[in-house]
Image 1 (cartoon, rainbow, N blue to C red):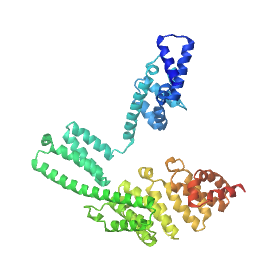
Image 2: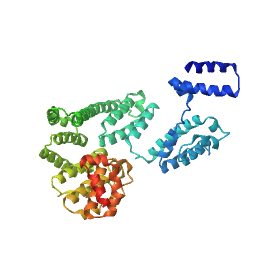
Image 3: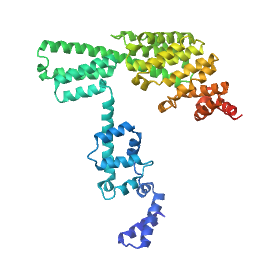
Image 4: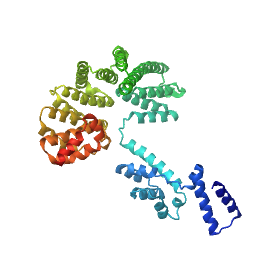
Length: 453
């Protein structure tokens, strides 16, 4: 069969254009495609890439408006191409070519798609920068680096100093090292005399900067070592099913307890929450409930005393820690501070940036669990309307806490006989049947039977 195909292809060299030979040519290609994998690629039509379509569909309305306001090239073809793709429900390249027949887009659609993709990415970067905090550390570093490249040293030093102060406040050690590098480079430039005329002042500044670099490097090293310890602990907890698992965890716990994180030159909230998080994780894995409770109480006390003065990333970590610690104490029957910490979270999450990192929906889990364990089922069911307004946070739909929340509302709906609530929550738990059945085997099926009868 392969020889027949090759022979037929040779006959095509004669240049005959009869319909019979055209059919033979198609037959040859079909045979080659089934006998030689490489020819299958040659014969098949490539599916047009829909990457541009996916990017446009992922953009928010505000981002699309920003693009059209700032990148409308006098009503050019790029905007028209953007509008047509944006209007499509399913990507249709042939429709685009037909719409722009006789234009450069129809002739070179692939090139225009690449150009539009680059424009959109540039627009997204610009739009996000415009709405970002004016004191964004990374943006400041970009500005300082650009000024250094342009040899505008006075402005570079001012910008790097602003970035360094903010990075220090946020305990962003890796960013601090980057800013120190930029500032050191600016200070070494010979033209620095017009910024700091006194050479002694330059020497003093460089000396202080070198000391600061050593301190930040030490803090960054401590944080890196703790992250390495965290990875080792997670590896043992998640994957080690051998008889040595417990002894390995004990060894890692000893390493955590002996670890001198206090050798840092600062009282770092970042290092503190990492350290006590490591110790608590080990105690949890070793099922040392009393020790877990001590660490949990310390974390809650730390949050109560220091929350307002912590960097944003630490605040997010503290809030998640509060949520987990509440669950721990509720399981032990301690509900004394649940109302205080719910109010604490509500107040903290009024900050839009913090709420973008931690969803209020997480705190419904300890709240509803506390009501359920105290037999306050009507109170728990009444939380559902408050929870609904957070349902648009799609990134949390698959989170284990959200799944447990849905299951709890379904159970409470059964107890309180609120069948309309059960009707609304049942499809949600059915989507996560496998994961929820791991928590309570057969629970979804039982709820389904109750709903049917």
